Image 1: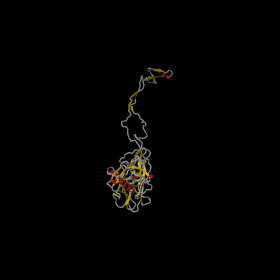
Image 2 (image 1 turned 90 degrees about the horizontal axis):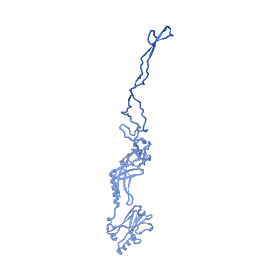
Image 3 (image 1 turned 180 degrees about the vertical axis):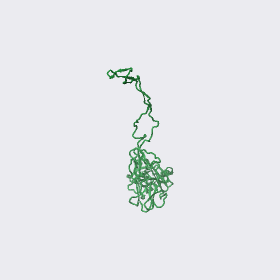
Image 4 (image 1 turned 120 degrees about the vertical axis):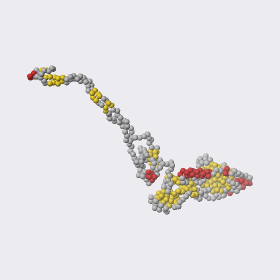
Length: 450
């Protein structure tokens, strides 16, 4: 809130200029910081310039223009290179006339930051103001309505988000649950949503006391700020048993509403959020490759560890046992119709043969022994009579004699051995690593906890 006034001293200044036949020459704005200033109080018109010790900056007026015949606009532009300063008052005066003061503005404390250009315009209004200052140029020819321009940019951005997300899209959180020990208290989790094209984010858990049910919780989003402050999207939680629709408040600010949850008499809660996954995020529970040993905030490396299903209900929907799979050294494979989701399959080699693989057969044929062994065979018989080649045994009683019989000589010879065809047993030596792999790069598997 700010207050403006034309000091009584300006009337004397104006009379002097009229008597001299000269136009007013208000050529400088003094920026001051007045301790303990109450900008909501009406300015006493006896006010004059503040003590110089309270002056924090002086800037020459760069543009003067009329706004009708009874108002003149004085404008300054402070460049970004100017050192920072903090002020809560501005004084328009003629620096050629000591102690002159034509207009005073008391306002909320503001700081000109480093690198920030600052534009300030003061509109001074009294009968015949344009003529008194000898100003014929309309301020509309050089004044730029930055507020309108920025508001138009905000609206364009809102419409862009509205096209992408629709009127209502909860991307995360804003879930309503009942307090564990107090049935009149309800918890609303931190979250992110788009409502009417406004991006609304709640960073902390909200606690709401509700004594009368049934009732519906509504999220009410709007954009707010001042001409000298940053604008931000704001959201309130409202209770209403009746349906609510978008509306404009007494200051003309558009409000966009949507239901969060219905609270029933029996303590049950009906979730009314229109939940939508962000287009640039994966569903909760999906394993994602991650290139470091530290999981990002809100995620966990999948090492077979247990997690709190109450704290992370969406993760529990994907892993109902409350335990993450151990994905170290594991690959993800699409399941067949006969497979079970999350089933583990050990490493193995598919049963196989080696078609057309043989050990060649060799027919060695007939083999021969070495040549030699010329010989004959003989026998001896005990006969009497007269045979050739006989012999007499003089010692034998009765003069008996015997005969020696010889076979024919066989001569040198060999024998044939038939070896025939045959095969051999082949032992195949082990080769390769401890398991089947493909070329790969190691990542950690992570999953979002939510």
